[in-house]
Image (cartoon, protein in one colour):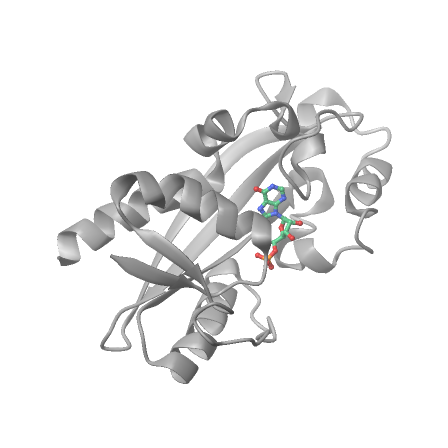
Length: 190
Ligand code: IMP
């Protein structure tokens, strides 16, 4: 089975492929499928934005398409950066901005979670959405070289996401969990 992933983010494409190719699902980027667009993320929730991105590509190609919207919610920052995770600061400065805002926040108030919503639009144009979350804490410094985005400051059991191997991250991550639900859903639809 082939699905089109509505994203221009190479890291997301890699993580989707890592998880879906072992179960026989080939992931094509929207660009490879002929949809070189960037939908405006005007929604106020991850669910809305995942739908907006999937729908924009579906409308163009009229083929089954999947999109994810994801981000980091920091409790002490009232859920920031949330749906603005990709636009929170200039590239390369986003982790520093969160660390800066978290200065002086004690251990027990450094809780945060990564959230991933996946919207699948089937061949009839019907949307189906699943959500995965991963609880963790914001550290005091960046650590690790793997992953992307906020991975170096997001810690689970004392290690940052950027210190985990791809397999270790995928086993517990918000995207890994959402993809588990997604594959179960696809299985039931067959
Ligand atoms: P969007 O879903 O394309 O709007 O972007 C989500 C943003 O959230 C990304 O650009 C990252 O900054 C952040 N993000 C989402 N998932 C992850 C992850 O697995 N690790 C680190 N940052 C992430």
